[in-house]
Length: 114
Length: 117
Image (cartoon, rainbow over all chains, first blue to last red; front, side, top):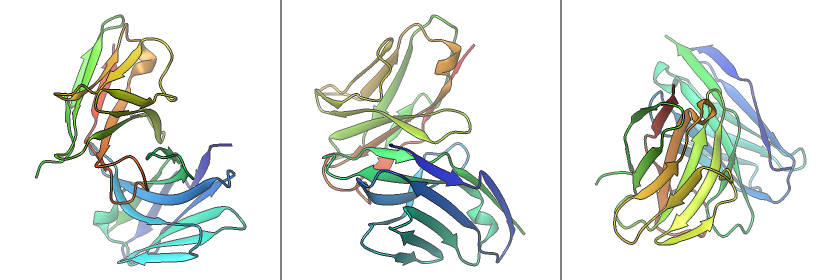
């Protein structure tokens, strides 16, 4: 099953809060999991990514937690700021595809209020 | 250092017309990917091309859609006889190589928003 299920669809937090966005997958052949940030009218930009042999990865205020046995991964944004308001997509890439083909989640629209 | 350039940014077509979407990859990138984003949905892979070759078109609708990446010039996504359901944002990404992970190696353009009226 080549799907990535993402939740919630939308999220509102106050400045300084920690929004958490969750994704789940079925296909164990996925072996690379990036998160993308998209502002209105713009293309997606890679935010952070993780391999399944790592349980957590942190880059600045962004952290990915990965649970291989549950086939779930999540994005945490620490000390969120109004400038983080955007749509966030999780994605997954199949092992050995030989090229960069991604399966995207349906996106989470995040609003960080001042 | 220009990024991935897509044009036009917005395109309006009447049903039955043809839509041509252009993508100029980043300098030095020879691999291009097209994705489609329907309203309120994630991006869906359409096609992967290298110069003069279609490597994978498994995400392309079988009819009316075609893509090319000639030796010279931009990659073109062509939609013939457009229908309302083709209305979407079409994104192009490019990378210096096709192997490995999408990590830092691929960059998305700003997209072309196609509206079929």
